[in-house]
Image 1 (cartoon, rainbow, N blue to C red):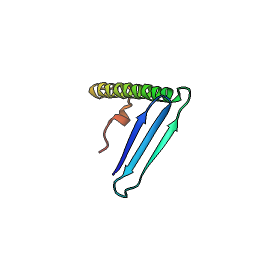
Image 2: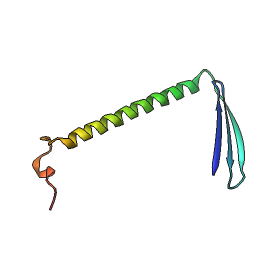
Image 3: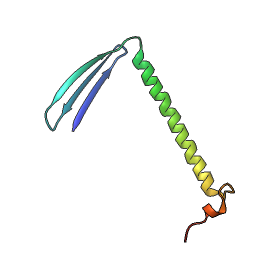
Length: 82
């Protein structure tokens, strides 16, 4: 099992890991400048919210579509093959 720990601050990010199978471990310190990490995390959060909203809309649309007979599908495609 690999255990990873992250300590985030606006100007620096400390990352440590341990592989319990091999005993290998290590640390890295990432220096940030001018708030770039905040912009990246904010962008990731916004993208997640948009993705969840789109997935919910797709689910609702699919349920509505399955619950109604659709005239959009030509009859030769709507029948199940025998």
